[in-house]
Length: 339
Image (tube, rainbow, N blue to C red; front, side):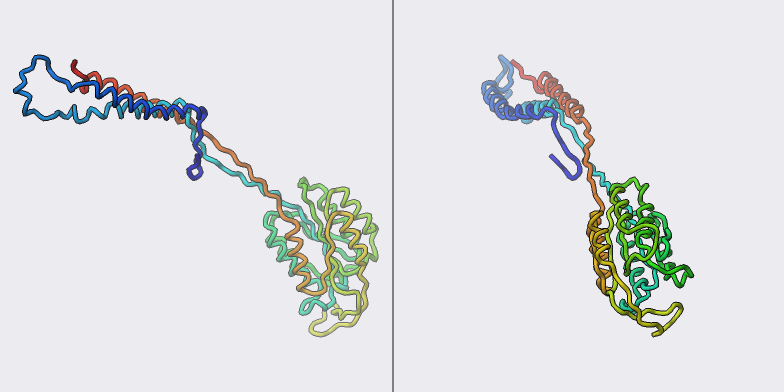
């Protein structure tokens, strides 16, 4: 039996069936009572009792069998050993460790994600993604010709927002341009290799092909697989001529440039590690991609239920025994029968 969060159980529930004998016992007492005459005095002078009324003892004598029955019911319940317990639940949420690998090569300045370029559009949706992952540790890797850990794994998402906002194109940072796809993936895997969690994910975003670096992308993917790291890959833009902003240029400054997109390699990386491949050709596409990844990588929730029980039979035994003792005493004193 459950009352709110409190659960009542009986250690010996079969004893409760004895309560069904109480009505039989009550019928017996009623039949037995009819065989008794009202108390009186032998050889009494009858005229003195003609006008007398029934005393309060006679009026309340019916309480004796009721008292005895109630005492027996309480004793039976006590012997059945009632126990109360408060049920509780402990919710354990298993978080994820996520490494975001972001391409900052010069082609990420393409303006096909207007009014933002590809990098700024990616930073915007990454910020929204971080906001939805409250319980996860997230790290950040950026890469162009070389790969850098921009932020270690952290649960301090406010600091992470600041670091995302500080990301700039390789040209703006004064570093060599290029796309070291394998290096970026390898650095992200290195960020997660010592993670104690079962769920480890890399989200790799790029708009080009591997043009430099000491690690081949497929080799880096194989290393991630060996570390039980899942890699989701995102290809942004289209492999065609796009207007690219000049470094430090404002307004409509820029030029048309061709670039390539190695979609086959990105698909293979995702397939090899058990991840998913996504294409994003505009800002809305990119937002949908990160929302989809957010749904795919849900935190595991485990619920543990337990109940702590407390014995209640002592109180019932005390009260039931007290009522039975009271019935015996009253039956032999105040409510005793005079033969």
